[in-house]
Length: 321
Image 1 (cartoon, rainbow, N blue to C red):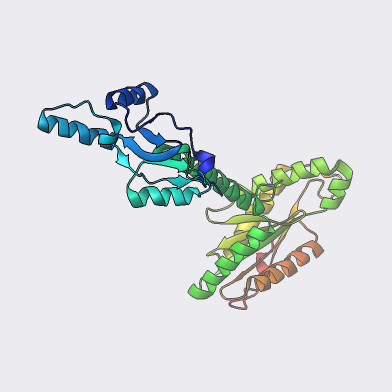
Image 2 (image 1 turned 60 degrees about the vertical axis):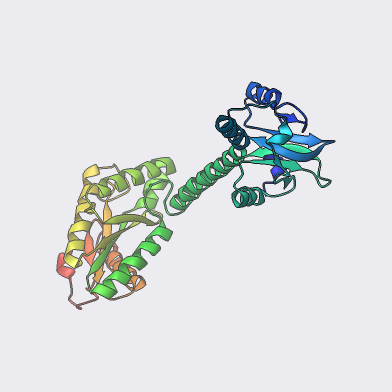
């Protein structure tokens, strides 16, 4: 916790009660200070502020007499002081309650040890706010990173689960269909084994970039695991999902990334799609996974559809090569 001793400054201008006002004001002006603390034997007796000087000047204008005043004639006696071990919050509360801009700082015996001004408190408060802003930005960045796959710069599985839960809840409430496409690169382990993991990473990045270029606004791509991707398609039925997955498959095929250990001799993509209006997200993924398994079993480089979980209509005719 920030205490007054952390932000107090030394007393720049001080005076005794019997000092001439003109001399004290000259000292304040020379030091560029807005107040002077009046002391006797180290104890605070009063404070001379701009407010006191304005009042004295106003009185002089009204009377037409400028006396050779001493400080004691216009100072504020027994000013509000703050202990050096008090918190910043306590100092701010004191300043607000008593409508003062200058707080002499005293030790536990009452002796003057420093000064805290309105400017000191504002500067420290601004520093605290700036630190909080930096921390908030850092936390925001960490939250973003915790939802993003560092290699592919798309949502990770945690982000997918959160987003799918929201889309699923909306679909159940509105009875509006949504769909997913579960996509998997064909023969990717042999690709990694033959070309190396660095080339494998480059291939994954190229594939993701190509797929993203085919997607509609509002659709989202996630790394489901390894070389497996999931496309979330809000407001889409099974035919929309078929078209989206087929665009992705063709985009990967058109990359023509050499793959000597594939019967197609290039890197290809298989996919399984499913759509629903009311089923849970896990059930939809399970259906898409079954369709993907069938696509793999039937030769890869194709999209297979699952059963529309809302209507029970078979979509096997949507299979493509």
